[in-house]
Image (cartoon, rainbow, N blue to C red):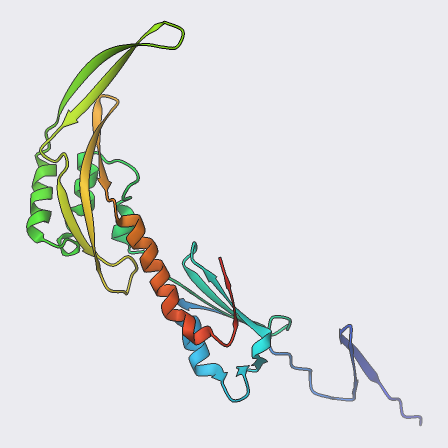
Length: 241
């Protein structure tokens, strides 16, 4: 009887050929891993898996890793094993405070009833509960007076154009108050100065929450949070957007 030798040939990639004989165990390939957590998740992974003495992150050389800082998306993504099949990806993201985001500061306008529903049961987000109480009372008993003014003006061609200007006045016009709320969930609260502006809108009025400093303070808060994370990623290439 002639013995027969059976060979099983598997091509793993362009540069590798494995010849397996008989009942050899199956080839085990490490799967790619993708993890998503809070904003500090990538830094936590590095703190537990990076070995300074050999410049290795988990099983990958530091030169095969990078970090992506995306401030517009409020996210940090760590990539370990850039060119490997078993890449490890760890992502973390800041979450905007939902109450603060719902206010659309320097954005859309609200009817008094809409704004009332947003802030009525949120006194803990106000620096002063008295200011919250006063604002709720003003919205519940909202009264407004509108005045129209007509003006005529000559255009460049000598034609007369009539313009109508409408003003709205209320006890809440220019009302100023302060919020005490975090920009991002899980972080310390900040003081935010706001005032109310009222504008006519198709026979009614809209209330706007206005702040001269909000955008600047928000940008500073984003920068501070990313800067806090930066030192732990110093061994890696940091790509910023």
